[in-house]
Length: 259
Image (cartoon, rainbow, N blue to C red; front, side, top):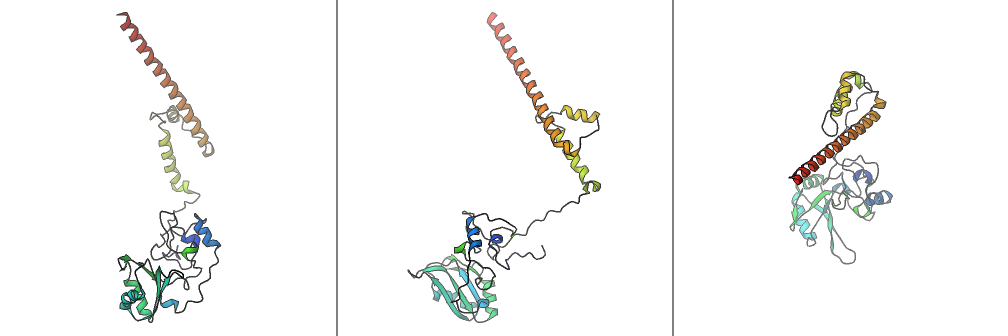
């Protein structure tokens, strides 16, 4: 727990597919595809990755000039790379912006949270392809994005940080000596004091006369057998009541018929 952080320090597809980073088995095909992927960062990308911002969820109408106009407010820009489709030339909706100073990229990262460009709320984060160890892009099943409807959410990034795991305290083996076992026994006896029809069971009355209680290994079998016996007795009682009511109706009908 001391090493836990809401943001991932190294990318693990299995942890990114978990809300708190504690899953041990992949829960969708995308996670499995990311685990089997052998992704190598693009060596043709130039620039300093420590000074590069990743901007996503851009509008199709957003151009390099518009990005330069907006992000130049935070410092001097070295280069802008708007990723476009190789065939159509249309924007793919994300870009990389490299600054000249470290103070500029920190200010842009801090002040552009939920920034709106061309009526679209964009997502801004540091570049992860060359800075985060083991990074796998979304197209190979990785990333920190995903849709809730498809059940392929990814966690560990700025947009969806990990939730802190809940560690339940483990009681020691001698918890009976500390009083935990007595509380648990009282709650169980309270549950067994009434049967499934809400009436006090004969077994409870017998327990009041006899203080002996079956061993822990026999409790489950005793409870199940007692429950079945009580249920059978209640069913027989209900059958007798039903037959008694039917006989009364028949006698009343005979009296009316005689009159």
